[in-house]
Length: 207
Image (cartoon, rainbow, N blue to C red; front, side):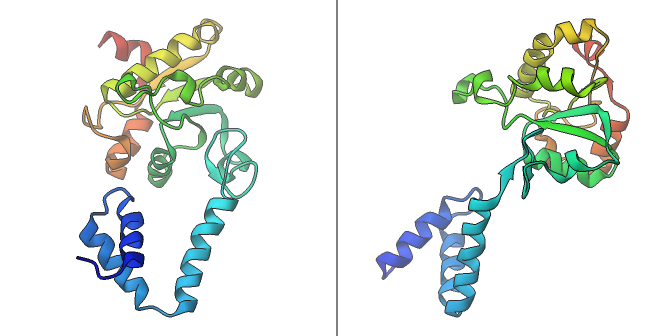
């Protein structure tokens, strides 16, 4: 039993984080309790400032301190390539390989009827306009090789069929990432090879 309602409330909030059980949450809270007021204030200020100041990139939905993220703003990126990922963690995983030099489009999740997530809940609607406006030559599906990831890729593929008929190339990662795994958990070497040796999406469908 926790002998303080204030500590218990703090533990409840800390335990709401993914992967943090109540024992771990209690350890974190007691550690914070033992720190100086200045340390705790700095900790809480950092979280509040993050929540208030971090934005989604106006172009690709990546997290950013500015209206346009560092990836989209970089003149060194290949603007004819757009890699579609589920969320920010997948983008970070691909960036860590240092193998991909194009742009991104972050969906903010994947279609999952079981979880009540449909196409309208994701950043899909503006993708076609972006492809037309930015002169994109190739779209790469870098979605997790799960049923939901495959469903999302196929939905987007059908949505951009007219662009494909006009010459847009669509590819997908090679299956170096194990089926059923989340993309962000793949090791950097495997992920880097998967994007370098990507395959045409229509061939992946036939396979």
